[in-house]
Amino acid sequence: MTFSIEQHLAQAMAALEEQQARMAETARELQAATASATSKDRTVTAQVGSQGEVLALTFHTTAYQEMAPAQLAAVLKDVLNEAKARMGEQISRSMRAFDGVGESLRLAVAGEGEDELLSVVSGLDLDALLAPLTAMRPGADAARPSHRQEEFNG
Image 1: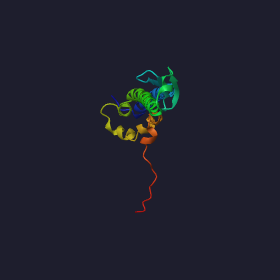
Image 2 (image 1 turned 60 degrees about the horizontal axis):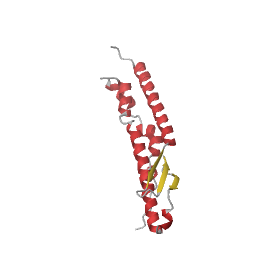
Image 3 (image 1 turned 90 degrees about the vertical axis):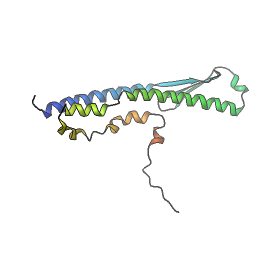
Image 4 (image 1 turned 180 degrees about the vertical axis):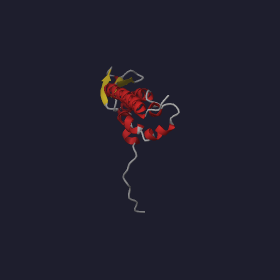
């Protein structure tokens, strides 16, 4: 079998375009996704969006009117955290579908046993490809390292 860099690059580009289409579809699905949770006492249901934003709080009874402020706050906190956790699990499941994408793209370019092409794709920035999906993960903003230098006056 003869070695054709053009053929391997064409296959790799087709694989990359397929992965990008899958990622774009997943991003669209996650943008529209919601998750909800209901409190243990069935007093309230919270619904959140893919960015963790609160979309709705539905009170099913008037029992909340009898609660002490601290008790109501605890119920709301718990139900909101549960809804956000469910959204995080949904996003994580979607992201797991892309495990190994970088390696499969590298193999698509290099083919079997053609290590010289690995250097061509070793610079493939999988983080950049997955950035739109990663940014949707709840708490993604807090996980980003700060590039700002803190001043120390000690």
